Image (cartoon, rainbow, N blue to C red; front, top):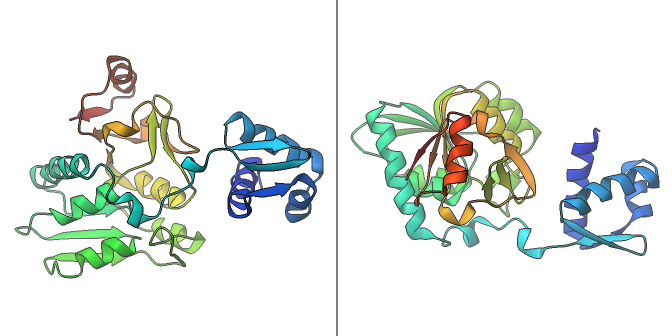
Length: 253
């Protein structure tokens, strides 16, 4: 296990238990206490944990990954505006195959998919599957794997391996935060699947409302060189637009 993978696993373990000792973590991962301290140093520098008396605990409860039921009602009007803009790209560019993640913004897009055209949607989201069920003009491919009930999606190594065999014309995904460094998630759920699908797509659309601007989340999802178009609800500031222009990202609001 490399250091990045171990640090993610350590953070997930601390998040679940709220507090853990260095010695317990060392035993769990089969490494020395010194190695664990170096990992905790990195997590502390990222302001993810706090340390005291040989223990580590979650630093910011607000960064814990929210369930889909909690996320879907946040900034709903902004998400609906973004979804309508995204749907126009599907029609205008005659896109026939897409991947949609389990984000609440992507769900708003699926609600407004045009009924006048055939489309194949690949997704690992249970919410997306249920939403697409009555849309008989859409072929839905559900990417399987173990169910993560908290975020209502299939997400394990099986899911990511299956995605490596799937190629689409476009991906429509979201994230918890965006900055000039890239896009971030507040949890590890779906990160690897998004990375694989963005690699296997001809065009990647990132759907993110203004509340996510200039904010660095916990886990790096991807860098801007992997994104073709950012669709948002408000014009980003000049510095942010300038940074994205260097990567050739088309920004639509």
